[in-house]
Image (cartoon, rainbow, N blue to C red; front, side):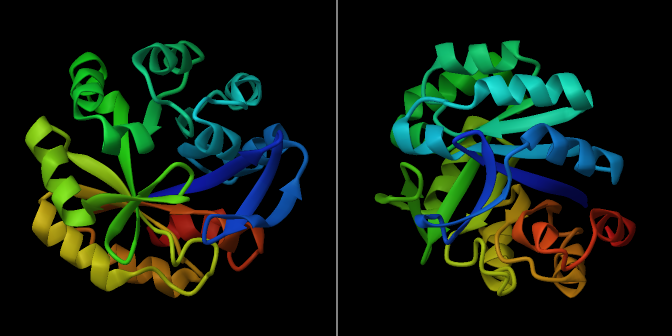
Length: 239
């Protein structure tokens, strides 16, 4: 199970939101490159970078920072936030990003999603961001007509083998991951899942670790690491 530290960018700073709410923001650093180097030093194999400004505006706003991080750490990055056309997708990959996370556009435009899959394959991954089993879009501000399970089944039909699942009600809360929903998603979709949202301590990681055989292949961790609840090194040791 891969442990993936999250770096959420807003205005060029590293922040965390509470349940995706922009008015409940905590700034952890004004130096994202320094933060990336810290996670790399602790053993990260992949960083999860979210452009919150891009997610809200519909176009990436922090690519210059992403470019600096790539140059500094020389390791794999996955990037999401505002990537809503093939041109932008291609541009992000040209920076050296290993994988691009699709959200809003993937939910709204099946033709775009299929085209992205056809051109880039596993280099793109879809993040299903949900609250009460409903998929949310546009920086988690707007509900869509799709349920988590319906959308996951659509992804499998296209050819995707994995997805990111974020329970928005858990994100930034450190209240524990939604194990029940993750189990159901694994069962219904047949896809591998990277879980995100709610991890508070090493016990939560062990709970997710137990689902590895069912298809949990990774976990994205943000606030718990930034608040020092455990170190990345400790998390990697039990993964």
